[in-house]
Length: 307
Image (cartoon, rainbow, N blue to C red):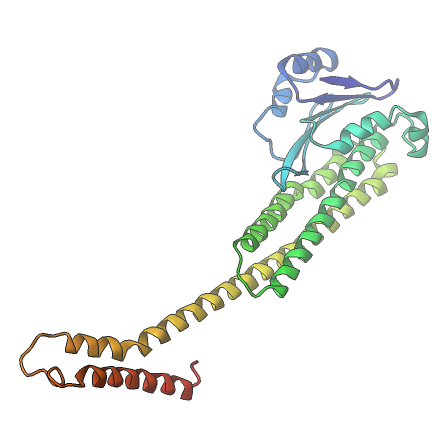
């Protein structure tokens, strides 16, 4: 699907889930090279800037939250930036991009955001909307971290769901970091590469604001990484401690019953002249010896404060 706004000076074309016919249209209408258009098709391309003779190709990745799997996934946005057109190709999984395309048709919105059919302002507004969209996801990860931390602190029972939650959060943070790690460098290169498409001096403060925001997001994700790693280590320590406690109980139990097993094995041998075998109270004597041995072992462990 191809959507075009009604602006006269700068035409914004939004392509959702591109097809071969869409790409042929972009090639014929805007003169985009077919090799460059092939970059929008799967698989994902790495984020970068490609400066061509008549336009710029910019590839960026943005995370989005999959509510079904509770995982953070990656969506690629491809920009083709010309003097009088801006083409964005998306898979339709980034709501702010679609919402902005609808809002920008409103003249009041344009005046409020000082767009005025300017390529640089429009490009800034798109990137700004996509980056602001990341804020709620960061807050969601922070809430998940607080919840799992409270669970670990309040529960003494080791549960499988805790490690599942920890690994899910850790995976989301890793995917988030992988997605935005190139934003700062790509935006810096955009300022230089787009000098002939918009006024870089006038818009530099705005694009620097985007760079600072990406740095802030990266710093926040680093803090989240340290936190989830610490929680993971804490939970592993709890699991290890619990296993050690279980092994300790089993070991003490096996040692305490060792005299019973030993005497039962000895008196179970069918040999001649076995003591106490022919005695009237031999069975009870043997039982008494067994219990006494176990009691001695129990008392010794209590004295050593092992139990």
